[in-house]
Image (cartoon, rainbow, N blue to C red; front, side, top):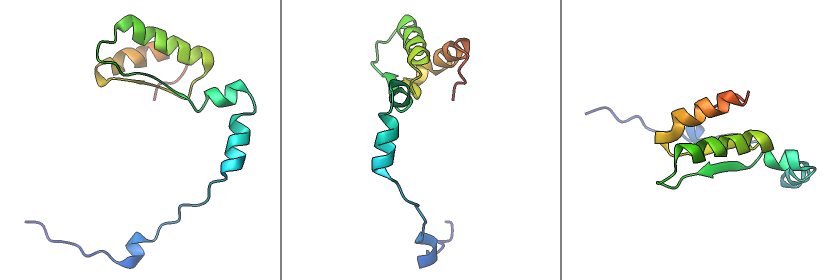
Length: 90
């Protein structure tokens, strides 16, 4: 059994910074491209097809969505489809 390491108060002291919600909102709503950049385009239904995943990636590239989310089984297809658009898949 591994030894337990005690936590110190300093271990729990984090600097989370600040978040300016009003500025984020104003910047995100400045134009459709800024808004699209924070949208996750997803297709998570279990009966999704390769053609639907390809279409999803094409739409994401066209509208410059922030990311594409698919079921893990479709991840290689999404990476390949995203690479064809010139976008870097993450």
